Image 1: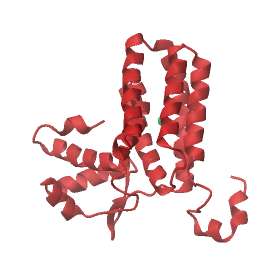
Image 2: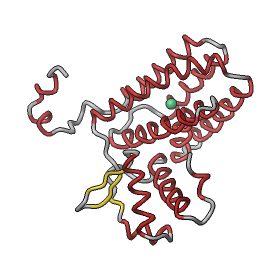
Image 3: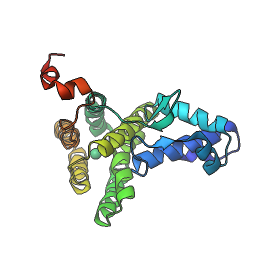
Length: 236
Ligand SMILES: [Zn+2]
């Protein structure tokens, strides 16, 4: 989303460029969760000062994409099981009503844009273009908000899908890219039929499937839950 902001020579745009490059690498699964990010190395790599790198890292920490520790420096965030569940709950709160609203407003041109995106998505899946398909699958959700003309929603969703991408790396999704892409087609079909109820159902099913495909039950972020499993069933 912020990739187009890289032009110009001021500090803000340099910060944007570094932050966007790291975000892209996370979405496309080129940077694994937990990877150390050394300030000096990034400064050399991007040809910017450490101050610029630090500003970018602070921004990414605010977006929960990286973790900053005073003594240890920066590393790509590792969302916990609880955080991952909250990310999906938040996406359901936002994206199910969003799709219902979109069905009412979608024009033929909007549907054409989304159809075009899904063709690219399918071709990336067929060509086993892992980076491309990971990015396109994530972008589909943000594109709906963008087409609706709601920049704030697009920004919030962009952050949430990037965090979902991190979780998918950490908890190894069982859902194939082809399956996700097929669900996107199903969703767009419902939108095209102006069936708001069906579109909401498909979106809910899709988000549930993506969440269920993660191995969230296999690991415990909290060592006390891992060692005393009964604690995990305590009422919240
Ligand atoms: Zn999706």
